[in-house]
Length: 187
Image 1: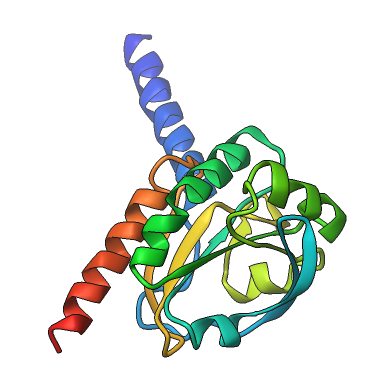
Image 2: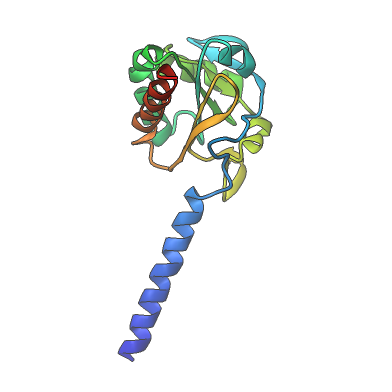
């Protein structure tokens, strides 16, 4: 009886671990991959405009982060952290853009209250951008997973990080930018 319980416990634990891993694992783009170009309606400080990745890359690297839904706990925490770090990104020559499946009316509010009018968030209501970046939530393909990319001015992905926890996205993308800048300043 004890061996059955133990095998079930170990088997159950492995199944739970596999399920949790599938929530964060995916076929995201990897360093060296070309970042798909996109244009989308975005809001910065409640003002709506057409955001173009190609135009943003002309100014320097872009930190593109996907998040599941505006005004949810983790996404609010993450938006606050990106807002607080905007000056650090600027010091590295980079800009930030967040993307979710939310509509532009929701993002107009989110860009003011949670992004603190520091960086734009783009609407991807049809999930085309999410899918092109392989950033879909495994259990709901129209919703974005929490995925952060750093894209070099040449349009290549230089860093990717996927975690449902919002905790390390800012620190990791800033470090990736610092590493990239250090390498490119010496060449």
